[in-house]
Length: 134
Image (tube, rainbow, N blue to C red):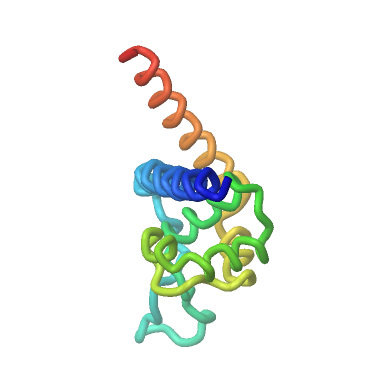
């Protein structure tokens, strides 16, 4: 019985990696919002704190949350326990639940819905291609 669990665990890891690869392709096509600050502009004063994490990796984190139906705390725990996934997403460290929540608020539900639909469409196309080749 234990051997079957190990096989399932490996398969589920590959499934997550496959999702990150496909979602990464879709997210790479998404235009970054102009107000997503990458660093402090020395010419400007104030204006708030720059975002700790880049746009595209955080969008991938949010898409993983949607796929796995996790809340912010669960996603934070999942990322903290999977350092390889954090690196695969393009992050230096796992974001906190408040950083993930903040990113979701900044990106907006409409944009998240659009990206999710594009990812689902990409998966459907891959499935159709596999069915045709069989």
